[in-house]
Amino acid sequence: MIRTIIGGIIGYFISSYFNNESNKKLENEIKNLKQDQYKLNKYLSEETQRVIINSKKENMSVKELNEILYEKTIEENSLAPLPYKCCLKCGNENLKFSSPFYKGKTYYIANCEECEWKDWTS
Ligand SMILES: [Zn+2]
Image 1: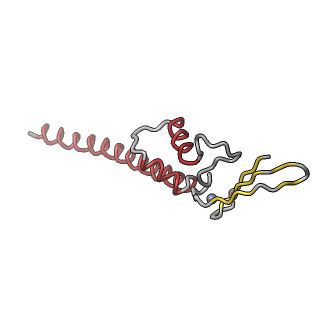
Image 2 (image 1 turned 45 degrees about the horizontal axis):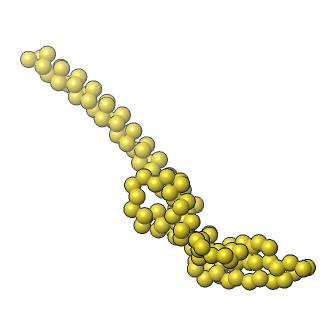
Image 3 (image 1 turned 120 degrees about the vertical axis):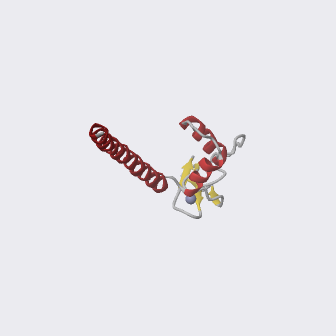
């Protein structure tokens, strides 16, 4: 009888030790996930996050993400020097295009009206 009780007590401490270890592991995983989420929110624009969420893919490779972002931002068959559908930084679709002629060259400029993003070519 006493053996059974001692065995039960030892078993309880062993299982509670392993439960604590797996709880710590789980807490660490949650902490890491929260840090990753924070980084994603900090570095990816809301538009980019929407693209990822709306894609409904479970495992998206970098290549697939780039293809989706390319489709969202670049006019595929356009002959325009800057064939942007939207701002590459914030996703705003109101871009201002201009083509000033300067020192014998035409420059093509795209400016986002929402953020400071711009691109140019000649
Ligand atoms: Zn922008």
